[in-house]
Image (cartoon, rainbow, N blue to C red; front, side, top):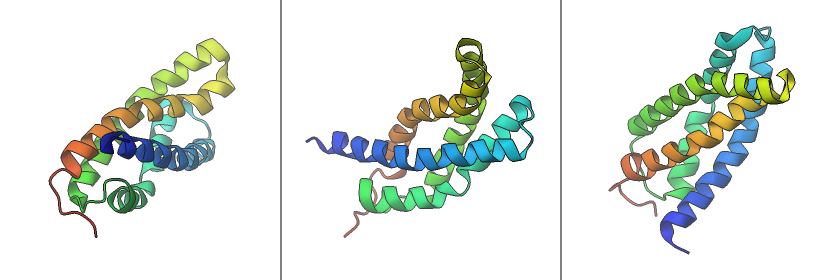
Length: 137
């Protein structure tokens, strides 16, 4: 299997596992905020990313790309993706609300945005964060 395809496969699996955790956390945070509209939904989405950044960096560093990478670049990449997902998740929430109903939108808006956000996230990490860095032993 091609190295990039293997990396993306592991990246995607890692994203799914962390994504399921993030999805549950985001729903709980949104409920704790009183399910108060799109701003609360975006804030809950942003807060969901915070505890996952360090764990995700370690997983990508040691298991996926097997390169040291620069944490500041990983942080900037993660923040960019966090902002992107936070901005588009309310739109997906509204779209799903219209098509399937409110309960599905509350749970699905973030999930759809996060899955779509995995593509630019992989590209940023592969070609900017971990590019040309020292290999892990």
